[in-house]
Length: 134
Image 1: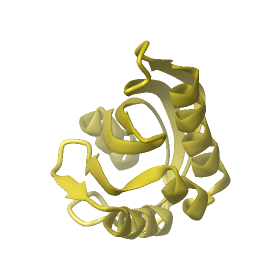
Image 2: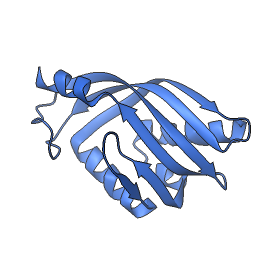
Image 3: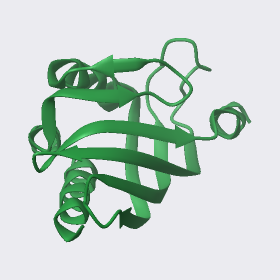
């Protein structure tokens, strides 16, 4: 359990530093990424492309991170608060004007061979849209 929590903590620490390569090092080659209210993407290279889009459109920091894992260390979960700024238009979303937002979120993880094999992210998209549209 503690190694899985340490892995997810390392992943989020890399996120907050903007160290995409360190984040990618935490993932299996065939990582499954369930995008909030969207589809599943598969593979580390696909996740790298996703991070590029996120980096272009958003500046985010996760705070108040709480991590949990099952006793076997095969599943983990995180709860956090996203403090962000919407920098550039993202497809299908309102126009970006540098709006700031604060949004609770969470994620679930499958852990395999000391790497993250699945990430499923969740947050309230309607809340985010209301914050950046107001």
